[in-house]
Image (cartoon, rainbow, N blue to C red):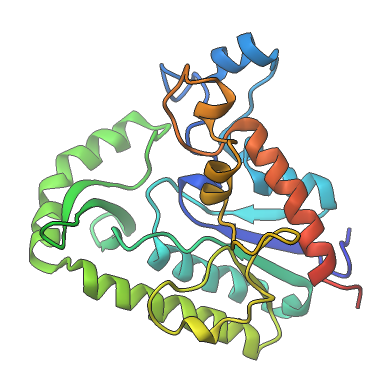
Length: 272
């Protein structure tokens, strides 16, 4: 299988790329599936991994994909895991491409040695006091394994302590933007196609080739899926006429974004 000479692609980011808000009844008692079923006649509801734009794009262009986006995930996590995937696919680096979110700097990542796993630490940014306020620490939101969710909750005090001692929103912003431009530059230097949804917002903005940043048609906006869904009334809330207040990209929004992305890629990935 090949799409314009490319054999596989990689996606990473936050809940917006994962399919957040579209969790099925097996994960959420307040799943929006019944609402889509009633309003739009949607008869089958797969996992988030089957409903998001990456899965839809994979179907459209006929090549496999890896989507490691996770609810709450930040840029630090995106960069770490993208490098790992590139390494695993190094022998065909000229036949792969990446589509990456660049999430906001309120998201942190901490390695926890006893579990040999990374935890996602989320916060809210207090604009008045110019610092972040800890909200949660998890390995995965809506975890299929209840025992892991309970473990995460029991360890939250440890990560709160870490957060209070080490987290600084301005320093994290600078760090993740250095990380992101580093990954981007690495890919460019090694001939790996990389398409950020957005470039850096503060530092090294001019280091990104505008032709690599995702945008659609004559619209000059750079479109991460979250902004696109909001601007085009394709959030879950929009699609369900306010029956849900969830502002994640909607079921149909993911599908339409995938179609626009296919057109974008057809122009950028010209046949070798």
